[in-house]
Image (cartoon, rainbow, N blue to C red):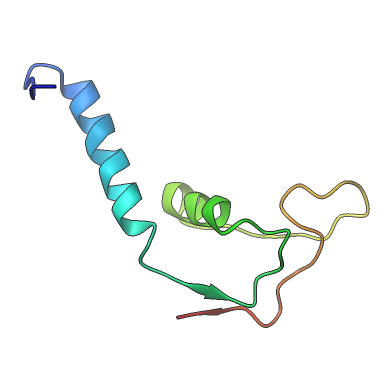
Amino acid sequence: MIYDFKRKDINIKDFNLQIMNKTLAMFEYDGLPDTLPVKELEKLLQINGYAFVTVSIHAPVMGATICQNCTIS
């Protein structure tokens, strides 16, 4: 597809997706529970700037445990 400078909304969306895809591989997480998907955690951090995990006695949304020994390398 040829770049169309008149379609700014699509160009901005494509640029943001490119940046998110490039930055997805910047960090490696160690010690996360298997129930906490790394891609979902990273997406929350990129879009919102923060993420949190809670323990639920009902069906878990992101995970059932709090990661106490997680490290970012």
